[in-house]
Length: 240
Image (cartoon, rainbow, N blue to C red; front, side):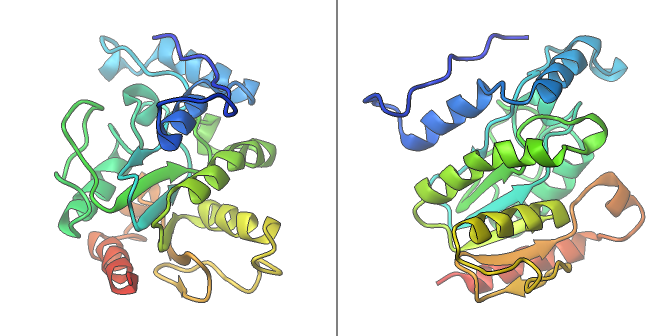
C-alpha cells in the first residue's frame, strides 16, 4: 500500500487548484478509525482474484471534470473496486453499469473503467461519494457519513458550474438534503421524497434521484440499464 500525502493546510498559499488540494486532503484523511483500518485490512488480505495487485487501501478521491454541470453523489467505494483501484466506481460491477450509461449519455469518454490509468475522462460530470472510505458490509455509520460530509460541502462550494446533483441511492439523497438543511436552504428533508428518477427542481442545484447501480439492484431487475440511462437523459434536459 502506497503512502498517502500529508494533510494540507487550507490557509497556506499553493499553486495547486482548490479541487486538487481538497482531493489530496481526502486521500490523507484519518478521521474515522474504523474505516481507515478496514480499508487497510482489505488491502492486505485482498480478494483472491486480485491477490497479485497492489490495492489503493485508503480514502478514494473524487473524479471528473472540475467545470462539470453534473455532480454524481454515490454511497462509498467498494472494498475490492475503488478501494483497490483508487478511482470512484472503478473495478467492480457498479462501475461497469455506471460508466456504460455515462458513455451512452455523452458524459464519459469510454464505456469501461478498469483502472485509474486506463485513460477514462469525464465530460461535464464529476463523481464524489457520501463516504470516501470503503465501509464494512457497504454500510457506513451515521457519524462517519457526517464527518465525510465536510468534503461534499467543500465540493459544492468550489465546483462553480454544478446545476444538477444525481443521488445514487437513498443515503446519498439524504446526505445532499442534509447539506441543504444545514445551510438553511430547505426547512425539512421530508418535503423531498426519494424515488427513482424523481426530480426536485425547486432545489439549487436540482436534485435527481436514482437507484444505486449496486449488484443487488441490477441483478434483481430493480434497476435496468434503460432506467439508469433515463436519469442522465433527464439531467441533460435540466441544463441551462
